[in-house]
Length: 207
Image 1: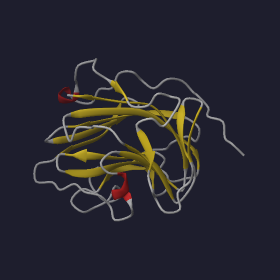
Image 2: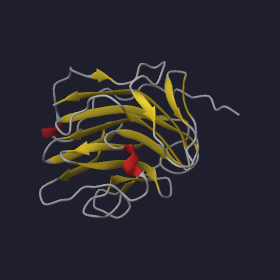
Image 3: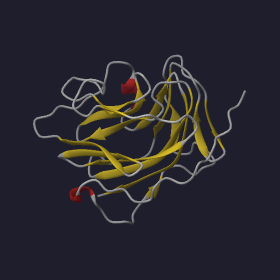
Image 4: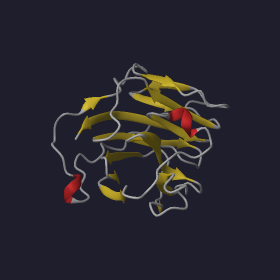
């Protein structure tokens, strides 16, 4: 049975965390046209679900891990990316974003482990459930949430619906990826784990 996406309202337009996170209000570049996977390709995860576009969203089907990779140019640092995502079925992470951090990569996990863990994988060799970026948040199935990530040469910050959830300096810290196929999402990609998800309103800008 196909689950219909339930739109519960737009994501918050303004996000504030700390003064250093504020940036110009223009310059956003759309990454999803709402009609096709142009600019994206399915990530070749073993046991993946199907990917499709419906009702203005990218649908990640329920599989072991399912995702899409960005195929076009993207900066290594000095950027913001924002998007909306919803968990449609399942109880694990629905909005996993793997992204470049200078000459490395990291993943922002949302709704992992027991369905509530938010954090970065990995920081200093520890995953999102174990390092100091780890927090817990309840996500209502079928509800859309706004996410925003800021990456500079020296810092990673993230927000959900206008609330700051991650603020970590990169001085003397090591970021990397877990050894569970998330490297297939690099350099930039979204994924879900044993969970069906929707993605929309994806865009980025340089800062």
